[in-house]
Length: 316
Ligand SMILES: [Zn+2]
Image (cartoon, rainbow, N blue to C red):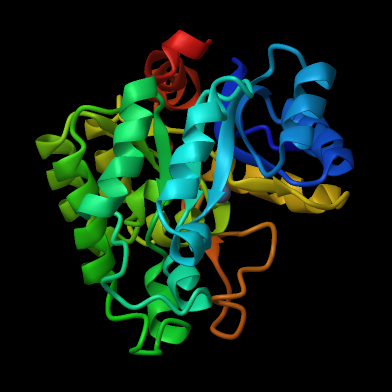
């Protein structure tokens, strides 16, 4: 489908550093659509060991594997079970651990604001277990500004995005000796947050970010493509292409929309291109439009392929 867009000129293979397998049937659709959009390899976050085995048998050599940890698990049963899961992670054939610990998880588990902060001493035991085994960690901790304005309003569980970002920076401060991938631009693709993210990059050398969530990235980075482009150029060695496609259904349009949106955003300098799917955050306020960053070929090459290979060289 993307071949219908002559402005997409990048023809070398692409590494998608953030996709999920939930349903194995749907993984086939995701892989097929991905291949049509240039994806040759991926970091696959597996929601079950069976799904991981399926992927490994069906697509040998295509994936490196992250074991999925739900963020609510730590609130429900504490740190000990997490450490046990880390101890068997490599034997199960995984390479990384991934935790989805968006603020919604704290609310879902009715956990108080200071219980098991990601940067506290109890959670440090979980991080130490990963360090012992040399396991990189992929973490999703914060969410779009739009969620804080509309969903995270219960003050029992949520305060502000600034608080959550301090917790995330606490992880960097405390665990400087391990490889970290922060999902969703470390929660900060909003133009007014790029300065803070730049400070993190300049301070902590051990983490990279991914561009996952085509909707969130397209909406926010398009708001000032000039500033966004400068950011990409400055930190071109620290950004990994990722979509956050989750294989849970056979709907091809879902996957196509994500790949197309991000490629239009990064490769073209088109203006006001409608996001090729609905953004529920802007559906009542006029919709989301992509303003392309028009990144140069050598920058794309790094974001699409080289950076993932450098960061995960021991697995590839
Ligand atoms: Zn994800």
